[in-house]
Amino acid sequence: MNKDQVKGRIKVAKGKLEEVVGKATGNKTTNLKGRVEQVVGKTQAAYGDAKEQLRKQP
Image (cartoon, rainbow, N blue to C red; front, side):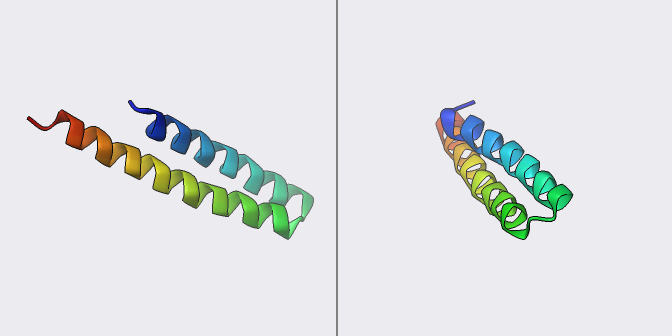
């Protein structure tokens, strides 16, 4: 695993937590920020996955 994969997955987890907190408190802004953070994290993790696949090719 490279750092982009790790950081991306951490962002996804933080975003999910923030989204749940936003729903629980009824705060739409926090909910939206959490969903955006999840998208950013998934994108970063996918970038890291692609880098890892290129590194493993002969």
